[in-house]
Image 1 (spheres, rainbow, N blue to C red):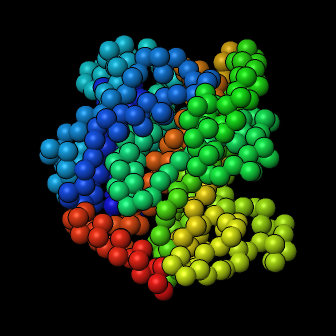
Image 2 (cartoon, one colour):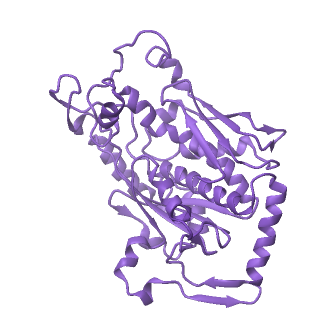
Length: 391
């Protein structure tokens, strides 16, 4: 990150998850109600596991905000784990170790074995408690703070799911605008822009559940109202597409990221791959197509930023489909360990993707326009938008 940074902490079954955000300017109005709505969105989606019935995430803002306005000092966010009361002995900070819920059989596809070797743990609960996607709770909370900043200057972020397993709605939604896709997805239990197709997806998920399987899929995240020139071409680590790709890949189980038409561009002639440039008085320069996904040369080009991410199936499988593994102590073959898990979490991952895109774009706004007082920064953004149309 550049001017904005955050750290989060906490274990999946610990007492709480926390985050500290540094770099949010003063005088930005934020609301815990807004953050809680985003946290609730992360917990929705057909195919989620039993944990979602226990946790009803609510944020507590512990510092950096007074009377609804940011102070410019670090913002501390906390989300308590309601399930903690069932794990106080197993996850105790002090005392003697217990063998209860010990994990000795690493799950293929998870951080268990590699993390255990790296950090020297035989009980791989020490790994999975932090590697768990439960960690994304505070990312969504941080992203909700950033969304409020972005929306104040006309930047809107949304997401939708385009496939789960082999089922896809990609070809059926081409006629819909990004905003229409988002609005429809908000009404779908699977976050697809075609809620009328939900039953088809549910049948696939139910079948996977019956077989002890899990499913992955693909989601898209977009941002509209993004001004020209966020990011830079002058150094490799200032390119905003690189920052976005890293942010998306940091989400648990994400194995592929595309911006715009991504890999499909490699199959086209140059004349079919690039977005032609037009000019209109009062509007400035623009493109009629958006194959580049709103980014050229490591910078936003004024068109919507569109990012696509592919999520692999969740590594935790139920009894019927347990994968083969090896006990970390005895070295004997074993069926991999199981934790309470989702069948599919692609809709939730899309919400996390929104948060990560919001964090990257907020950092880019602060980097370009200043990072002290939001009243001043907002005016600079508005002046810059006028400058763009007159360039």
